[in-house]
Length: 138
Image (cartoon, rainbow, N blue to C red; front, side, top):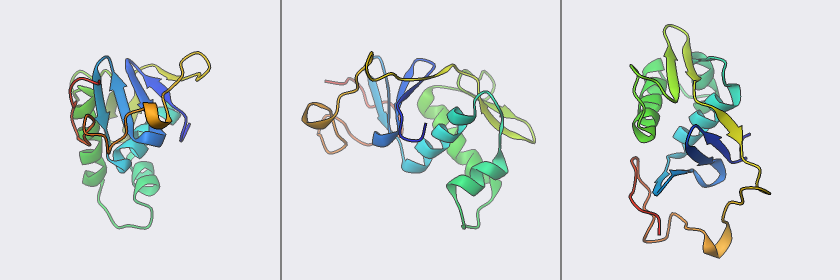
């Protein structure tokens, strides 16, 4: 699923573009946030241990568990999720995290994703990289 587009609940996730979108909202994620989201979604509905997140996303670097927690909290903010009322990512106390939303790989034959000149890119003035919804897609 690493580069394959998928739906996470009502969000369309495009890992190859570090982009998530729903309705008229588009968000460009930091690469590590997207990697965390892809890892969690690929293991759904199983729990991904915090140690595995650290190993996969920060391979060879010395980081603490709080680094993974901050990344997950940023993802929750972008998704409009909360720890108390998880709709997308649930904390499994003392274990890790798991995706609780429906995950569905996008069939590009039935749901084509724009690529090339017609698609918005992070360099387009109408699409700015950000950590929260950027507004209307034109």
